[in-house]
Image 1 (cartoon, protein in one colour):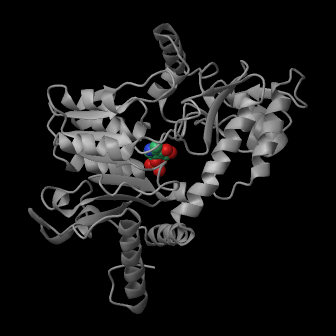
Image 2: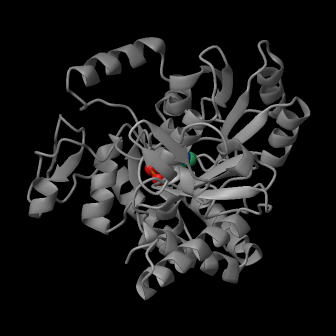
Image 3: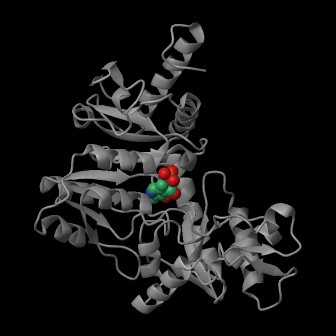
Length: 406
Ligand code: PLP
């Protein structure tokens, strides 16, 4: 399939790609003045935005310690970051946001997540965005975790999300913002498709969004994400939220009932997605995740979920702890790396799946020895059953599961 050609198949592909673009804008509650730039994922979307906002090295971007690395690192390259701190429960209030907005020098942008990928905390986005706008500050919302669970905040200036978090394949993501923000200046990626004309010493960039989409587009990824979003819209937010609120309550109370489980994050009255982040006795999170998978066929995430500053706070690590882990990791030893386990429910989760997780955790919490021996790969920090299938026991992997992705 290709876009941009005169042939019938090309025409069909282009039309499908553009229909997907319209779906993204509708899904994000955007107006005709906005564009959807189709990219690889949220990380690319935020890097693109950071490049395109034309920030000066002395400009301040206000962000928070709750963020995924994707919404922390790109801003550090182009501006000074100011952080909204969180309390031990992993949340912050509107007053902390306002303090950050009002501190001199005034920030040029507030870059904030819509929901935490670690604790599932749902931020009060409407209030936060209104506070920023009242003070003349634009807002970029990282909606990677929010998008499959709650409606998008149409008031945000910029918004980004990833297909793979929304039941679509890996490889397609979206950045949405006002067309005017992308009409001037060089695009993040330079190349074919982004231009009106090129000579050896001249380039005339084309109009956005194509200006920001140099290279062959991921047509299949965009169309698949559009199809996934059509399904969200067909189900409707009311039904999705009702189901997920039920799952969130069940998940939380199931885990609260297990001795040894330490839930990290906000107290139960805080609005949260069906996500729980926890520790279990003093067991390494990697071992819990490996046992859940190998013995119970339950998939969870473990580690720091690409949110190291947030995990440090949720786990209450001291400066000395952090320094020790830092030294060990830099020397290639991840065997003591701190972290937690995260279990997430989604539209396809059934209540009995949660009960199975709780039963499994109760078995693991019990002091009885595991039915098989587990070995740790110090290089990645991951555990695997000693007698496991080949894919398990491959300890030559360079990248561990614990920290690799959010
Ligand atoms: N932001 C949040 C809140 C996330 O949960 C993730 C991924 O898990 C990202 C950003 C990065 O998304 P991606 O890896 O698709 O770029």
